[in-house]
Image (cartoon, rainbow, N blue to C red; front, top):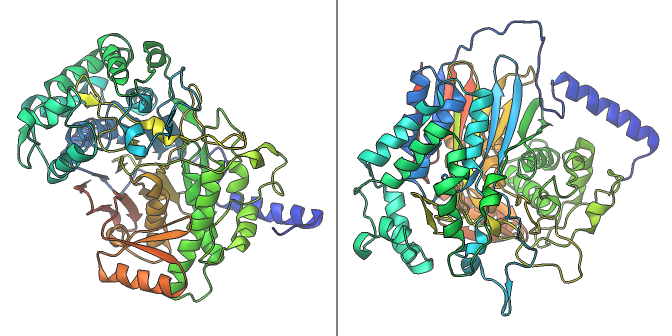
Amino acid sequence: MHQYSALQWISRCCVILWVLCLQGCDQSATIKADEDAKRAPWPHGAMITAANPLAVDAGKRMLVEGGNAVDAAIAAHLVLGLVEPQSSGLGGGAFLLHYDYASRATTFLDGRETAPAAATPDMFITEQGVMGYIEAWTSGKSVGTPGTVALYFEAHQRLGKLPWTTLFEPAIELAEGGFIVSPRLAGYLPMMAKRSLLAKNPGVRDYFYPEGIPLSEGTRLKNPAYAATLKRIALEGPKAFYTGEIAASMVEAARQLPHSGSLSLDDLANYSVKVRPVICGPFRDLNLCTTAPPSSGAAQIMVTSLYGHLKPQDASSDDRIAAFVDAQRLAYADRDHYFGDPDEIDVPVDTLINPLYLEARAKDRFAPSEDPTPGNVSAFNQRSDTAAFAPDTTEEMAGTTHLSIIDSFGNAVAMTATVEGPFGSQRWASGFVMNNEMTDFAKAVSDDGRPLANAVAPNRRPRSSMSPTMVFDALGELILVTGSPGGNSIPAYVAKSIIGILDWGLTPQAAVNHPNIIARGETVRVEVSSEAGKSIARNLESRGYDVKRREGENSGLHVIQVTPDGLEGAADPRREGTVAALP
């Protein structure tokens, strides 16, 4: 790694600080212009994009009724938990990134699931060794304390506008009156019957496989239990969820066999949302702001900055793709090694997004045949404990959902929510599935006794790939809201949307449609369902990369760009999302 003299350090740090100040960025992520100046009314109208049209309709309804982006996000996600339970819901967790137009302030609310108090580092190890993914995924040990409902309430108390009960009305109406089963939900069920316990466990078996037959596309499906749960939460607040009958049903679900879990009533009663720093970093003359660990939002700053260093001047399209691949390889190696719960371990995120570190890290560019290793932060970080982490062993399944919203007041929300794998742990509690978020921890322990950054521990939050992100111009004005589901591939999906729009000159929809490229470790996955993807795969192979061709990828990008002509949105065609605008 490049070493700098003391004089170089001082001069370079001064330049960096000056540039960051010009861009209006600070590490607390509060973006301000002249505090005394009154902001002009937001001129661009409103927009919402999410993974299901019924959820988009619910969010739009809140906006039409005078609600703001937070109101719309909660109402939309309550519907997503009903109509795409394979992706997220009340039994899971979420990250919410908020931008306030009037004050230019950004806020990150962490509603990530937590490990039960009785969790242990070796809980996924049996006499036969480390549990396989499917065995762990469907076990009671996989269930963590859900945070979504607490996140709803915290966000609404801080930032909401409409009455709390109003936000629940669309989802309750759909749960009681029924909704039409979508092709995506129906398509999951035959596969899940073969691969998981969804067709066997009580509750989910009867709901998704009535009389033993999987629900078919076009069926009208009612969920009175979900409606009853929502009515309780609407009237009583989150205490109705985290105590009493609903809480007891979650504990009962987690403690069922096989591999009974340890979720307790105390775990639920003690859950709290964390307000964490929003972290920002420069990309050209822009300012990229995103979510701090335990999320992987920082990977967006890392990938975009590394890409800027690795991309040659006058780069061809093939050179740009190669730079994007190598930026991912370096950023993933660092993310995998260093990221975990910042309340439990010392995550050197300030170093990993430091422009000086990233400039030096770009010089570590690995040959296509090499397996990338994490960077050495010690030259930039006086803390030495981070270097002692053992190699990461986390497996993370593709799942989750994302929605992006800008309201008529200019406020914005990027919210990514999850139950982890498809249908979570396939355990049913009061009309919803419970998460399997504990499998987002490293299941194995290190052979040499060194700690893992993402090891299981009581009350700890597992590392997440979720990366809701916003981009601001040099004057601090919002220009992009983005995020995606997709497990470990989320950092790659989201970075593609940012670089695609802001560097490759694509429209939001063209950037979302662009073939996905995921470069984590030795292998580069390329989506080859289009001729463009096939061409990318051939080019990367000619450069020596180990390419794995994929006909489809599980992204669910939902993006809004602010342009001089207004708002331009995109919904990922790989899912069932739509975009709705209000003038």
